[in-house]
Length: 156
Image (cartoon, rainbow, N blue to C red; front, side):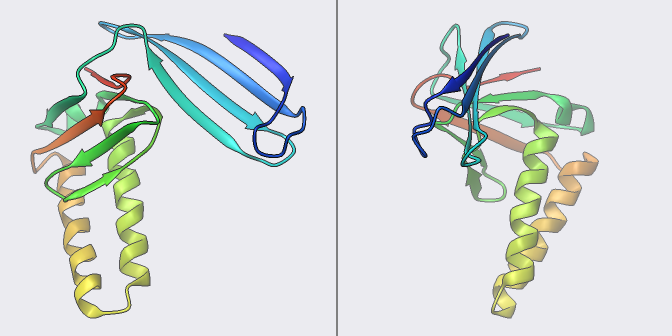
């Protein structure tokens, strides 16, 4: 792991930025996890770069509870989609499928709790029921990664 301290922060323009580069090995590729954090303004950024670029659109089918442990390596340019929910998010880093499901769950819980009308609230509740079935391994679903940079992948 390489660590650079007292770098110039692009947001607050002070020399309070710490940059970390960490190398991670996966079954068929090597990833470089880059993270920045500023002790002055609190900004945090994370990105991933793969040693070998992959296709820009890849998909993984989650068939059971065991598949929730599969890893997603996602760059800042990647969209993570679950077609069965008709939802997507942008999140860079290294996560398990379960972590991503919990991210979608949090979004839907906020939608449910903040919905002004009954129809939107009901839609969020129905999607939360579907996510619960995903978490239990009772319902198959797909995760799709779309990344123009080619810096995202799945690792089983």
